[in-house]
Length: 161
Image (tube, rainbow, N blue to C red; front, side, top):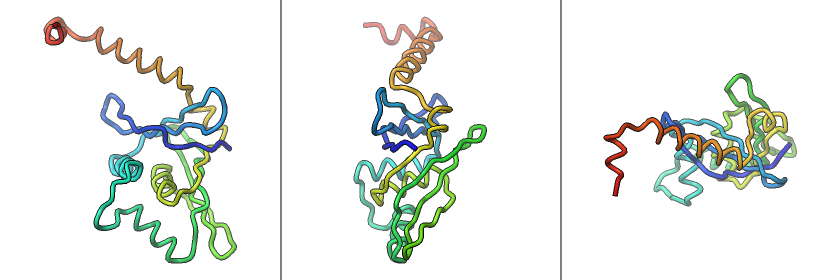
C-alpha cells in the first residue's frame, strides 16, 4: 500500500479531467492518473485552492454529516482496477469500530482532502496503471510533437513571428 497525494489535475485531449496522484515516498515517484467527472475534478480543485462557498458543496456536506455523527475519516484506499474502472473505499472510525465504505476514488479523494485523511493506493494498482514522472514528460512531449506534425501550413502560419 502506497501513500499518495494529489499532484495535479489535468485534461486529456477530449477535455476529460484527470487527477494525478503522486507517491509520497520512493524514488522515482510514480504517478497514478485517474479519469474523473467534471464535478469531482472541480470539488478537488476548489478545496486544493482553498476556495470557500457560502453553502456546503456535496463533499463538504458529507464531511459535516460524518463529523456530526461522531465518526472520522481515517483514510481512503484505491484498492483495485477492473478494465478501466478504479475501485476505492472510505475508511471510517465510528465508536471504536472501523467501517469500510465502497466509493468511487474521485469522491474518496475529494473527501480525504477535506478531512485531511491519508490517501493510499494498492501496489498492484500502481504497478498496473502508474507511470513515472519521466514517462509522463515523454507522453507530453510526444503529444506536443504529434499536434505540431498534424498542423497544416495555414495553422502553422498563424504562429510565425
